[in-house]
Length: 212
Image 1 (cartoon, helix red, strand yellow):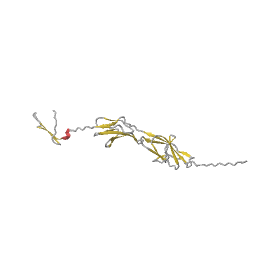
Image 2 (tube, helix red, strand yellow; image 1 turned 45 degrees about the vertical axis):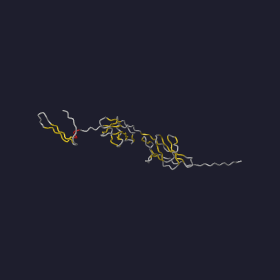
Image 3 (spheres, one colour; image 1 turned 30 degrees about the vertical axis):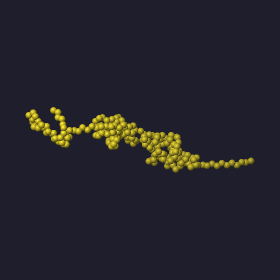
Image 4 (spheres, helix red, strand yellow; image 1 turned 60 degrees about the vertical axis):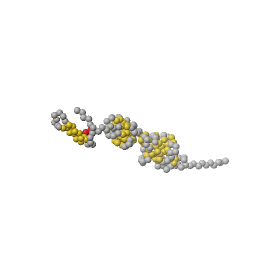
């Protein structure tokens, strides 16, 4: 007795290898930096069904062509053919979190704010809570009371630190009495022992103390 057997084999084509690109770029880069607290968008142009992975683990629900990245690690994306049998994975992209330490600041009591042990490769921006940016550099001069803080910026990466502590500073204003004088006369001059001192003030009579 002869028994005829037949099998059917379905050959599916592998999807085209997907590529991962930064959202604003068109060139594959295996290493990307992400400023701490920011969001990086990765994208792929694959038209197949997709699945994103982080450090080899499935990112559940991440099946779109664009992925929002908040944490560091190694990212890949897998293209899946319509019959679900054939899969092709991308080259990996490693994302590193770039952090900048918040500066330590001090007030010298004489109208000067400064960064303690500044990094010469960093830029420093100074802010007053109510007025925004008021100066740049590791040392600035102030002329009014306020709540001041600083932020460090790494120009090599474009990343900024968190704010430093806020210093509440009160600037005492002591007016120079000579600025209020319109004229000063001492007569007669020369004198034989007694003279009169006449002081005229810009804003009218003022009470003054004269010490000889």
